[in-house]
Image (cartoon, rainbow, N blue to C red; front, top):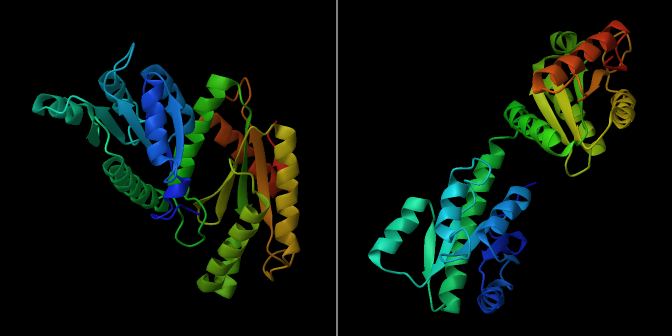
Length: 304
């Protein structure tokens, strides 16, 4: 699910330098280690990082327009960008310049003229540190029982997606899911069997919801939520219908349910002109889930 700490080839380094010659030199040093992208200005670098989130930024200290130092400070002050490590490439290697480098939030600096092996080793080291930090952070977003995303990830991701929708007018849909009569299942079959059902249901949900940007999360207990960016209500309805049928089709015995197998109920909602906040989207999906339960369970309903 996550990058291995030795998987440097999949990492991306952004080079920021207004000299074409220097950009070519740096690319030549690093292209066999990792993916390399280049921009000419600090302004371009910040815009790129907002969209692509590289694993490391290699930035010239002196740039036309905004300086590398200013760009570093700005990125450190921006929550979305503050985790991206920045290494300065500079001919100013005196003590005062080094102090400015650390105070701005950079993780290292490489003096000019460039020694290729030194540059390569420093980039490798910082990429490994970044991967290790990413792995630890990612595992904090994973539910220990089911292996899918947890409530913490959901809270973070849904806020991000809603802000993205406001900026770019993207569609965003949500499916709230509940395993039907799960308490009765636990009471009859035991909690270990209940845990096994949670894992099997989670695996099936994840098997069906496979687009890279979509997310399946365990919201809590027997509740799950599916986040579907760039998906209108009609598309979310199709996915919800597929999920309901797939879980029933697993034919997991549940003698305490009127359906005799494990089933789910689902509520579908999409962000609209009147549903513009995370709270209102969740409430709409939850209301629809309540309607599905009232309709006999093992079905889905859409928000009005």
